[in-house]
Image (cartoon, rainbow, N blue to C red; front, side, top):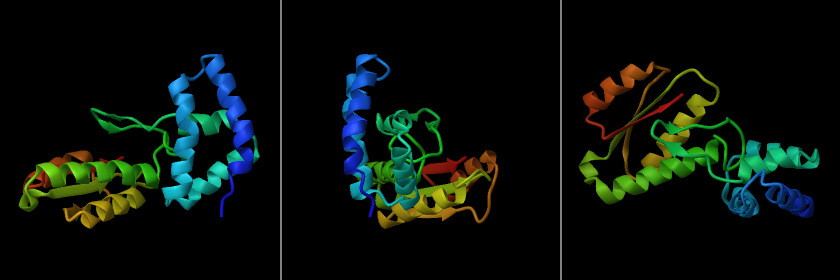
Length: 173
């Protein structure tokens, strides 16, 4: 079990300093501990929890705060961020969160017979692992998923979306 509560006093002190120096906003400062609580309560990325505990033991408060001050953003080209633990990084938990959001949207807005997604990736670190998690979340929501058997370039994703009649394609790069 990971016990982070003994570090909360030091973490809160550093958050307060960063807010006072306007290094982070008050809203961001207020998100750090609830986002950490969510990781320890609901997160399944055990490697991420271990990495966080190591950073806390080393007193690397700025890294911890940056990892939890906000959620990694979803922009026009998808999710962009550092491959790391925390709400503000790309990891199994953030992949699950955003995939569940897509599944919720699809299940509300798209007829069940049209709920088809193609999922692929390139050769970057953890891509295959993220593909498996993405597919598992979608399938658990009753969405039909096609996965490339190996890494493929992005243009093949567009072709497969058309070939399978998918409404979405997810390319993990």
